[in-house]
Length: 396
Image 1 (tube, rainbow, N blue to C red):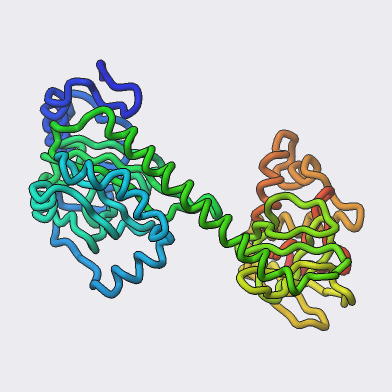
Image 2 (image 1 turned 180 degrees about the horizontal axis):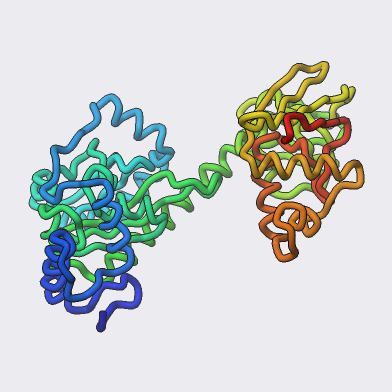
């Protein structure tokens, strides 16, 4: 389409675009040739809706009970930053023809602010606190589509799948945890279709950056609490060690040069840490103490390829097992066969794919494997960690 804005892909003439999209919407749903193709993000979403068999006339909105809504607010991790978001957006929402909505990662609306007039219109759409606004429940909409696309989304008028939403615009962007990288929610601004202003998309993205900065500050505060908790425990300890949080972020390092993060510790699951060797995580306050095992009992592992791949590990400290994908099992088997000398990423790529050019992919595969097996695989080169032996059974 011509005359599009640089940021959203929407044209400058909203009224004309709305009229054209109404014809496109009708044509797509009736199986006739549309006058133009919809934007890529819209076309992909409509295809998903048609495959789901959703009705353009909509369906009754399911709203979670108040108790569940309060629980979702706490579990979302967004409560610590909601006041900052409301300070940025709330006053404007009360005096402007738009609505500000914050959802969790499931698309359930946790908080909503706006003028009474716009809230009343949203109520008629079921766009209320506690309602789930995923694509599967309400069709193509900025909240649900942003979650699917993992990217900011702007929709205008008949770009929405449901007919009732055609008098509406919505601009949304996902909020990601800076700690885990996972989506924790969505910030959305919506209002009457032809009141969409080019600055709305920028306002949403500014709000997301504000939320993610606030989440990072919360993370730093948790690391500082963990440092204070560790002080009396670690006083006078001369051995190399790390104290990390539940996501592997380093709060304390002593006698070891370590990066900002290690693999995620798991209860009772030994892990190999560069500079420390094989460790068994020890719970310490809100985090974990990682230090070399004083007595490294041999660990015997079995990679069982009969049926669903599984690795089983046993030692004097106990035993555990974990399911693997076929690719993860293949990677582990190749590393085990490489022996003590190990294998580098280039050679591992050749072993996996039969040719050169897959070094980066091989590194990614090992990273995924180590998240499952707790770093029983040591890096640089890739090899079984010291004290670990592994046999492969069930091969065809």
